[in-house]
Image (tube, helix red, strand yellow):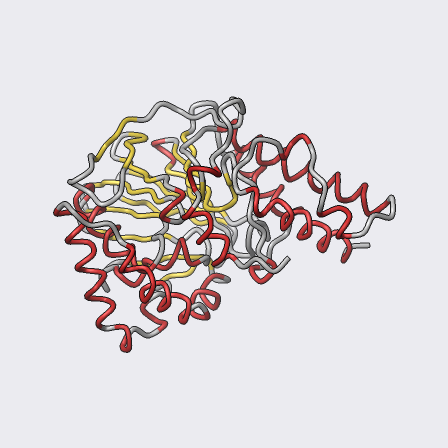
Amino acid sequence: MSTTRRVFLRSACLSAAALMPLAGTARSLARPRVSTGARAGRTYFDWQRIAEDVHAVADLSTGGNVLVLKQSSGALVIDSKFAHLGSALVQDAQKLAGPVRLLINTHHHGDHTGGNVAFSPETRIMAHTKAEPRIKAQHGKYLNQLRTGVSRMDEGDEAHNTAKNAAQGLLTEIDELAAARWAPTELMKGSQQTIQFDSVQLELTHVGQGHTDNDVFIKLAELNVIHTGDLLFHGLHPFFDPAGGYSALGWIKSVQAIIEASDDKTVIVPGHGKITDKSALIAQKNYLQGLVNAVREGIASGQSEDELATQTWDFMQGLGFEQIRERAIRAVYTELSKRR
């Protein structure tokens, strides 16, 4: 299938409302109660207060979900959306939590790292070591995000106008924006790392190949909040990126690790989809395992990739991002075929 992540994200932004899951999928849509922490006009994005001193934005139309933690010394931000939205994110984070001290990228994809360019040189940017070369290699894509995205930014109130003006400022400097402006300044090299961020312990975990080869999920231990990055697509078909080092089998292991790090009260911020809880992780694992089993059985019975790609199964029903259902099947077929 020729659909690229850029095309997928563009179509997701244009049709997000139509792609959201059906109301009947109650278990997969379960989520904790949250309150609105920032109203329109004060911030660019619509933030939800999901725990004490923690806000998140979960909006399919603006790229990956973002978490902001407020501490006495400043803010932690997890993921940074598209390049043209980075200035808006920095502006919002400063209003919610103060100057940004640390930005963590959950993986290299451009809707989670594009906004890195807008952060202050004083902000530490962390990602897994395997993410660094992939981020640098996306330089041209980031520049294109700026060129095409700024004109589409919302405006009208002070927060939106200020954010768009800042993005336009980056656009005027586009010829001087080197790849290093997006690159992490610190690398996570092992499978686990702990960072003490004022009163909150951040637990970073990289299990292995999953959605990509550089996925990291982050637990805010004392607050019982986890940002999964794109290891969780809540209520949506998951996106498989052949160029990003994916593994469906590894993805199952990664989701299982997040389940084991969670309890029934853990607030889960997925990479895409609404704020949720542990039940969504179980649903994601069941989807991935069900897909592996179905494709494995199809291969064993002599079905071709094209034959399997037209099929659907019960675990696929009622999910958004229907346009990538076939892509998921083909990705798993490719992986399992190589293991025969």
